[in-house]
Image (cartoon, rainbow, N blue to C red):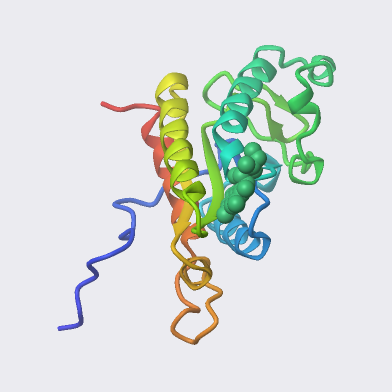
Length: 217
Ligand code: DLZ
């Protein structure tokens, strides 16, 4: 018998359909190479589960400490945008929305309808985000900085999802050294380290949570 998997996210209990979801990703820019790999893994998995490119909104912040605030702002901006869903209103919503990366929210032309009273402007959904993935990479240094930021970000992101009712996927690596972080992004310096990209788990988790959050019972 082959070794049982004891760590990591097992395959989902069912195949989820992300084709009607609008997902936001907010990522820190510190530790850039690692973040880019994690982002790629996350987006690949979202798409593999049917989430459309135009319904993935990507935003960046300087460092992980900024993630809870940006995550909260994005959730609120998504709600505001959907409340003012007439196309002419969209440009006049919050500053944050005007900064949303247009390359990831371009209309594709293939119009789609949501079952949840979503408004559709030229292909891209304008409903509130179904889930947010917050991505960062903290690497321990020689002071207590790492411990304080890890603690603040972890509690901050948990608070945002409990306060807003929008699932927040915790995509923050808290690594003791560079190699730990590189390996978890699937870009380790050794062959063994070129393994699993944790961003893929986060993409899977977002679609699973968004599905669950439509109907818990
Ligand atoms: C300052 C800092 C340090 C030392 N290390 C990291 C890190 O490893 N990962 C990360 O995402 N951000 C780091 N930062 C930046 C802080 O998160 C934050 O951006 C600044 O303190 C400004 O608020």
